[in-house]
Image 1 (cartoon, each protein chain N blue to C red):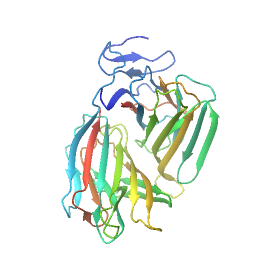
Image 2: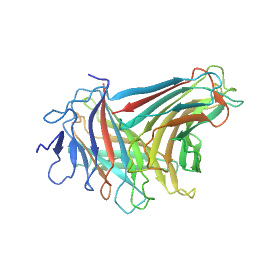
Image 3: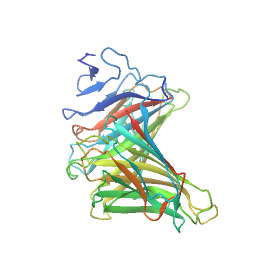
Length: 169
Length: 200
């Protein structure tokens, strides 16, 4: 087995509303997710929501920190795993994020997600954001993670959005 | 679950698109081994002004860079700048965030990827940068970079010991085929090491 293996990849088509990785094997120690793209919703940027194992309950907690503030959401039905550009951005602008999910197959502890996101909202003013978004996410479950569902908080993924899932031994 | 040609399976009803499975049609969710491949490595000579990876193949999905070293300049640290595809136009936006705040560059001629220790930092201290370049060969969107930087310029207060994060953007949808790294002031010390990986 390789120390770093690709488990799956989605390049979105047909304005799809979700990206799903299913039947994730329990043979690695950690997962890494790399996403870059855009949403169709009428905003500058939009959060990408994540659910594990089809759990739609209020079992997720998230803290997002950028250079202006920290936003905390507790007991949500998904965690905010990253940020992508949206429809009011200049054409072609994308945002991306990289996420680590340690010990995803363990059952001793509830699960955590650590993400870093490159965020760009406009380019002409200090009140606009070009920066780094740090995200800590938590799933209130000790179950092994076997599936991951990603969806923009609003709108759909613009075609060509890329999500790659890797296993780290 | 419906099998489709090649190596894709349809998503459940109500979800569009496909989940692409490695390994070809009929494969279980078998990992695609060896997904991180070293493309090239550069060990700098003393006084080297830049590090350049050229003719980067477009056969990977993402790029991952690990860069560790030191600079030669009469300062505690210098910024490490990034250009791609030899584009020196005003086409880069970047933000560098540490425990004191953020420094933003809009429409710059290069992006900031992190910092290296320089000549007035204690001897032998180095700094390191790890950076992702998602979908570097794609042409649908403009390009982004995300980096983490271990930052140390002193061993006594109020010198810096910390971490930095940089987010960068290149205002082009072109595939990246060349990456150049240089110091905003000075040159690289000898034995700085830059390694570029392709993630399948």
